[in-house]
Image (tube, rainbow, N blue to C red):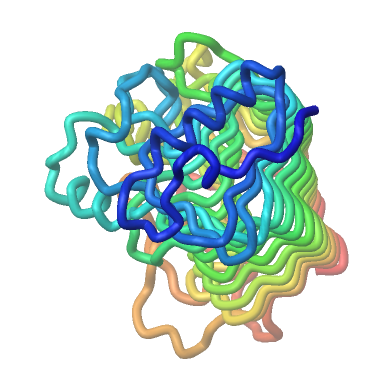
Length: 430
């Protein structure tokens, strides 16, 4: 690998008064021609448009350096890429790479997506195309993102797509709590992903594992995902699986994490029409505080295109077809949750495709007793609003509940619901 190349040597402006887009891209092109290298962003404030990365690259943002992306749609080429599970025209990501091998993004500096510009135009419906991701790496292998601070993302913050061998560690992700769709890390149709020691303060889901919708041109699974030692300080969900899961999501391990003030904790969601299977999910050793609902598995999720069709909300059993989604082999253990606002557990399967082989073990949940008004624990049509309820389970099979404690009072363990006909439980020491 060649010597370190500083972007300043290629004309980048460390004062931030002029654009450094051309200088940084020229530095990247020089590294690409040499077959790889080390790009250094030294201390300073640099403004740039979208950048296209290359293989065999170390992209380092030094301590005291900020890479700030220009607030102007003209700086972001329009490309075809995956957006919310389907292929469409989007503005190219701030940092973008496709068909790469051996990429590392690292350093003690900051990557700033200038998100306010994009959020305002999104809210005012002034954008011709979907907003750029902050970092998007597609169809690539051996990707490392570590130690950096990423903030103010226009939409999803880090989006690996159709890639393998991905390590994301020691990253601080910060987006305002009211910023739209600013998920933290969303691996989509990826294999062998590790996310560890990251801290999240975001406007949507902290981590969302996805595998495309039924509208995607290619169905690829997301599999072999490990999430550990992360702290979620704010978000719509702590770790979310789906609802884009048509290519299957399997073999996911979530462990040793802390969720503070996330609306939901562990959340799995899908609906009729998606197809695909979510399977072999293991969750253990999670501490949650001030969440609406610690554990949600929802087969009636209705947000997004197609969510308003009558079949999505129908509580009667419908014929099983290629669009029927399935959940199976889910084990959740060693969960502690404090000040739970809506209900302890909300699990709602389809009558024609019950959630199969669900195991809940060693779970301790205390409920918020000062709840002002009921809230919906999950998002679906005609959602039931609850306040400090215990367990809601509908349409599950081969469910085992061992050593689950939810407050010490005499209220019923299960929320009464008329459709609870396919519930098969083995309860021990609860």
